[in-house]
Length: 336
Image (cartoon, rainbow, N blue to C red):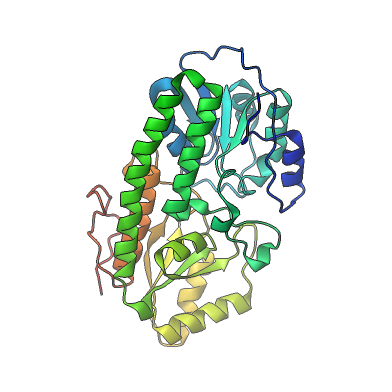
């Protein structure tokens, strides 16, 4: 049977060599092969793992390869990871070249006829950002726009219905219920970020992972490094951001859980030389979620944390424990 999401070897090769085209391919599977109950799904980053768990419910076990604090841009699968992929009944990954170093591993499992799905495959290109410095490639951090990421939830439901048609209605129902929760999250983020005084509505972070967040929630976003953490910030980049901090009197910048803090410290020092004190507004989750088992270790908790911390640090109005009153308060930052 044909799959609109499944990745062929050709598509994998195109991704591996850096082609910017989005390719929808088909991949043959054995539709008569019975799935074990529960069957086993392997996923990559936490954001993908969480939405797959929400949609599949108790009909499958879901194992995420990348835990909290893991940078998917740089992640190279271990021997154990490859074994997990080979033994899985289905594999879900984010796509848009986020997990670029896993292309060879995906190729190996696809060659064996495993169903391999990119959750972003059905997102229309009009919803994607293509930064100039990534000419030919899309910005992969789509989960920072909750409304856009919701499209991936429905794509997961459709993919699961392909491999387990018997429970298609369950997957679609679970996805619809989860999207309702995401709608509420999206509205919350819009509200609290919108409460930041406009001159101070500037988000400066360790790397350029928040462009979709900026687009969705109307905040000026600047990253010290580029979209991939493999890029390096130059002295001119640091100096330009220092000038921005001083000129707009931005009082807080943010670290990220999966990115080095060295460039953030350089910004603080540069601003201090101009007589402008800049605080660390808190640690944000960018390419990885919080610790497993915590509220921040869910996609909803991750975005709730980010929106709440950003709003409070930049002078907006947000409850200290976030939308659902579940946030930890290690990074509490009082309104100025």
